[in-house]
Amino acid sequence: MTTYSPEMRERALRMLAEAAPDHPNRWTAIRHVAGLLGMSPETLRLWQRKAEVDAGTIPGVTTEAAEEIKRLKREVAELRRANEILKSASVFFAKELDRPTTR
Image 1 (cartoon, rainbow, N blue to C red):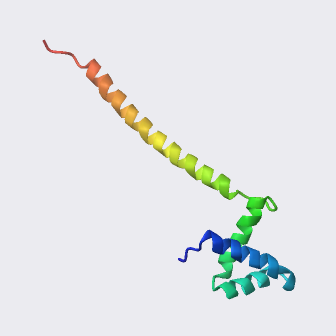
Image 2: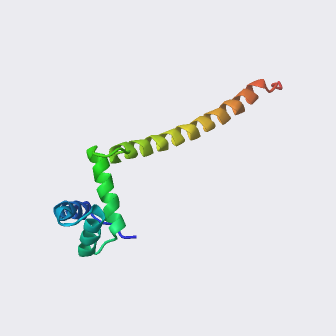
C-alpha cells in the first residue's frame, strides 16, 4: 500500500478541480488525473469524496469528527479496562474484610 503525503493529496485534488471542466464526467477526470500522477483512480476518488464531506458539500462524517470518534472509543475502552480492574480489586478486598481473623 502506497502512502501519499498531504502535499501530494492537495496537488492531486487541485489538478482534479482544474481538469474537471475538460471532461464529460467526474470519473473520466479522475481517471485522467490519476493516470498522470501514477496512482489508482479509486484513491483519488476517495480523496475527492473526503474533501467534499469535509467541505460540507455532501453528507458524511468529516475527518475531524471521525478522529474524535476514534479517540473517544479508545478512551472508553481504557476506562472500561480500569473499571474491571477496580471491580476485581473491590471484590478481593471485600473478601478480605469478610474473612474471620484468627488471634
